[in-house]
Image: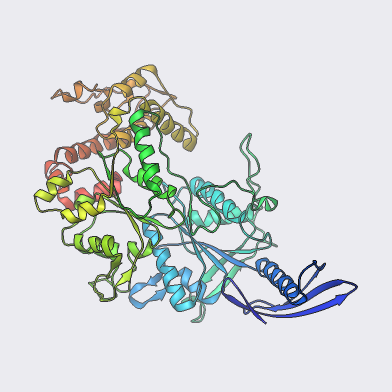
Length: 587
């Protein structure tokens, strides 16, 4: 007979024998790419079952056990050379090259952000069309830095432990492709396997140009290796984090149940207990369940619209699918269209291969469009068509695709004013705001300032092993300030405080000059920056960085977030201004 394991055909010969009321099944399994194996399974008959149905049931149970035992799984990051190493020549990158040579039942693609999530979705699309690998899972790992060894290692360990503990069999074969990702990511894979925290084999791909014209796979053999062994050190009071095979299937229920195709690395961190914040949070939780309606998040810059969007997605029925985000103000009209709707090969200069785009990559999930007011007018009809008809046509193409995506949009701009000025379509605005949710500014969340500051300080201390703490005067100054940049400004201020402090005490004198003003003093003109140097010194680069960042934020505020006008206020050309916002300040 022929059976299917995760859509992989397996040839099985089954022999049934009966003796003294007992029945046994013996099978020989031959799976393409794997050696043949013999298995034996005995059982007792159950009453009130016909012989034919009974034999069929037992055979099915037996086959299922054997199939799960021999499941082949791949873990790999998605890197800059995926899906193509050379897009112009359609040369496969590391992941597709490997999948062309080796067969797996499941492939887990680890992604570090929106851009890599789209690359992962394209890898799946090409693999299904050209290689016929059908079972893919997308794993989002939220990293502050792709070169931070400790952050990558700890988050990767948590994710892998969660996945492994939910696998159907403790005998599942796991392989790790080392090629994609940064060196720090590759090192983290090695540490997990060498330390015994993850039972897996490490694989390296050899490109055809280095292997006589044919892609080859090399295993990093650690069994008889001269490389030193690694013993994981456990923090005081913590249990052994190694995956426990016997606990599989016993983990508590969570929004990320078994079978999810998108695994969240870190849940959203919404912090606060003030009445305005809790009211907004309760509204977000209510509307999350209605996952076919679009949502418009309103609020000043830095109020946490992106975090609220992720929170809504994780509470919705779409939580096991992709969440992809785009800042509409960061790209030109052509690039925005390509990012959202994809393009076909040759659609414009540099379009060397087809691209799915964010909507097709997030099919079944959600797309978060930040700064929706800056979406170019010529792109707005295509977005309206996605909302109304759930169809799109890639840039340069003529074939329409059906997509099922929830859209969450956000803005800190007066959209009604844009509509009156002809910069935004009213019909699109009405479709986007099935429900709108206004997030409160930090100045209306006075009791949340201390809790947020403590969380940001604890994060710094944990990351750098410090024991810094606030003085009473510093608490008073933080509470008195109006925080025009909201939570983002508070977080940046705490980071600046910690970086500038040479000791363990964070005093008021270390605060950037603008945060030492009270809410009433902020309106007073002509106040000069304090140039006093603390007794224990300061980090001048951090001070200059924070001062420059404050000017950028003030320019955006004065210009109503018009980036071209803000650039002129600072004497900069717009491209340089936008590049600094994105790359230096993360705004």
